[in-house]
Length: 145
Image (cartoon, rainbow, N blue to C red; front, side, top):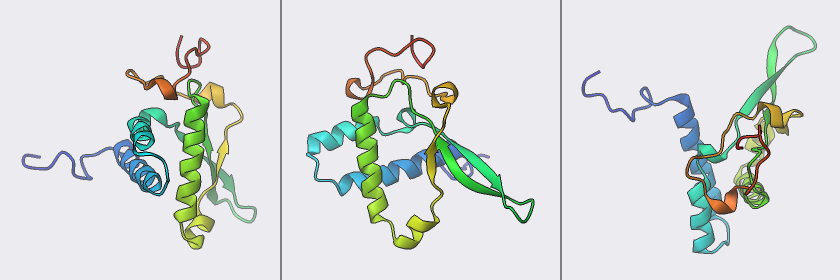
């Protein structure tokens, strides 16, 4: 529609909105760390959707009915992700979790590593990747040749 803001929630995709939420959570957790300003800048550089794996919803049926409930999110490893980036993500997750209220922590849907994580990961290596976050060599068929 003419005159409608392209950044309005109606015009933005679900993936864009999810990316904004993730970015805000990361920035809030990053602000609570005692890392140097240089380290924080390096981390900010890679935290966007290109450096995060997608979550796949996993549903189960309740035993007494045919109603499906969300059991967990199955996550995947990025085949090109360097250990340093994995450690940074885990640290920021812990800081974020610590900042949540007990009630929110208890109601969160758990995340589990998908058993066949290397097969279902669709995230390809970002075009302009950051050296410290990406493995130098990735096996063929796992995101980069």
